[in-house]
Image (cartoon, rainbow, N blue to C red; front, side):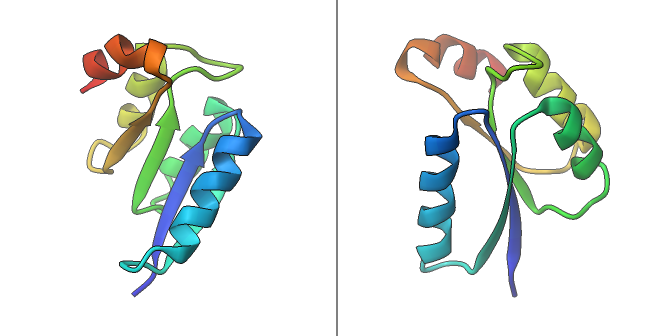
Length: 96
C-alpha cells in the first residue's frame, strides 16, 4: 500500500529534503506532493487524496495558528505534522 503525503512549505530546500527522506523511508512507500500556498493546499486536502500533511505554519499566504486552523478545517481526520524552526517552537506547541 502506498501512502500520499502533502508537504506544505514555501521553503524549497525543506520540501526537497522531506521528499527525499520519504522516498527512502523503510515504512513507505510514500508519494509526495509539494505545495507552497495554503490556498492551494486547502483545495487538495478537502479532496481526500492525502493520508497526511506536513505543514510549515509560516507561509507566504498564511502565518501562525491560522495556518493550522485552515488545514484542520479542510479535513478534521487527517494526521498533521507541524514543521517548525527552533525559534517557532512555542507556535508549534500551541498548535498541538
